[in-house]
Image (cartoon, rainbow, N blue to C red; front, top):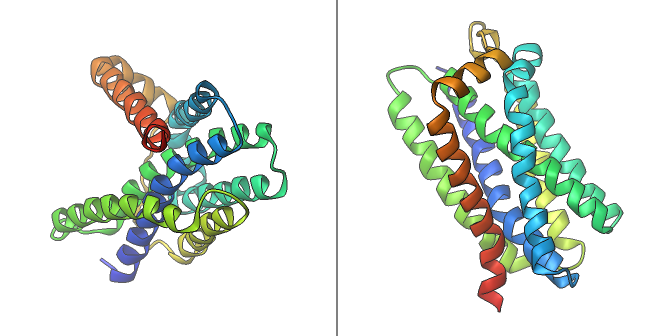
Length: 228
């Protein structure tokens, strides 16, 4: 086990968690400042969930073709471009499209970084490192709204602040070269595997889906009620 690989992947997990905690209240509060109706803000939040549904079945094939390192780097890069698009064209359509794209990217990052971490740790240290990653994720997700509170939700600054860890994520992901035999060479499955899991554990998948809907609604709309 190479320590620098583990630290690098943990940094990616932290960056994704930070942006996750930052972006959900940011979109809701920024759109509220734009004078958008609450139901439209809720619709915008639902697009993040739609992105998750789209990218989920495609991930095994993407990882098998490009490798987990390139998929992670691409998801950070696409999220970076999405924030840049809002910065360049502050239009409602761009906000909605960016929310869909970033929902897909953040879901993919959450999955792929966990896969990558499992691939770079050995069995001896796996439990402690996976536990540490969970603590790191929760901590960074908590820090996200605090950062947003400091920079505000209007103007260009909150968009630029969001782009910094995304750009760093691209660079870190590309800098972690996989050792021979690590996760990039493993069998990743395909869409048929996803369908098999869906048929074998449909109840669990449905429960996870409903839990995700509730969490997304809570994280997106609670900031609005808190300011009401």
